[in-house]
Image: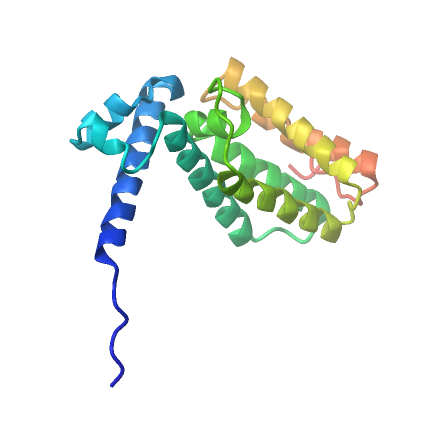
Length: 203
């Protein structure tokens, strides 16, 4: 009988504490905004003294960095699990709708990932890596759908991002701009020469 591998219980406890700190930071950000995340507030929420946090994160920006990496990793995992329709236009719409849903359900997360909302915060290479993988996966999907030009992928992201910004800024919780997605995807698909049928006519 083989012996069970040794567990590093100290490392496990340390990682669990780091997750608890990051979860507390998200709770504060969702309740009071990203700028409200402070070492003191996070420590108070988890019953830890502020100086003790420094053994896990050496600054507030280090906490933001962990949040950034965690959130992009979650989005990447969701993208990998997404079962896209075979029709190119339907697939593009599914990608856009997933991005909208991920963003609208957690505005603080969207702000951290897609806006320069924290002065002086620049994500580390490790935290930024999942977002690079997201773009790589998007490019692979676009290649498969028949849209190999990276400038076209940039345009798609800009169109979706613009609609999303308008939705969040002007009607949070509503769907005024979300309802425009089929129309915008059709316009994009017509521009890059993707076959139909039109999304607008099928909805």
